[in-house]
Length: 180
Image (cartoon, rainbow, N blue to C red; front, side):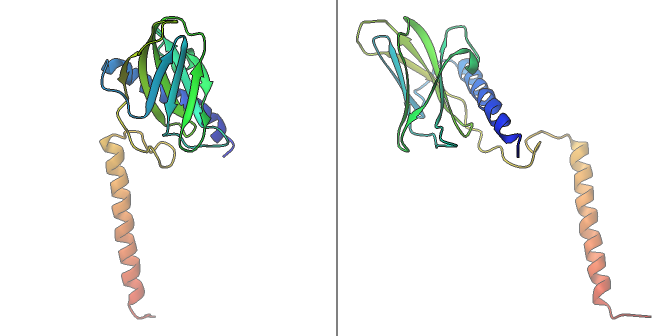
């Protein structure tokens, strides 16, 4: 259990990088329902309601400039808020196109969204979003999400089959009356 904390810290970066890479490769799409990004002058704000609090933290949001592809490369801000709404904001953002990525404290990506900051002019932002496809829960005991080959699966199936046959044989012998 003592390695859990370090795995959680590196896991959030890996999850965000995977979500961001998949999102950037997919190109512009409909808005991601997991996050809402807005801009007011040179301030960018992200809002979500999908994160849960883990160890007093809601998660982290990252503002990535064009050319940045890794969650860790962006300007990171911790999410703050309540059970219903979590937010993060960046001040003094230069005009340009940015990608906002949010990773909750439980290492689940809340989503990514691209936004264009026009500067001090107050207006409606241009928003286009990309999102990673949902993958479900990758649970189990270490290595359970690895794709094993047919040989490994056949050997595992043979072991399970042998255990079932042996159990049946032992139970059948026990059911017979004791003989000398």
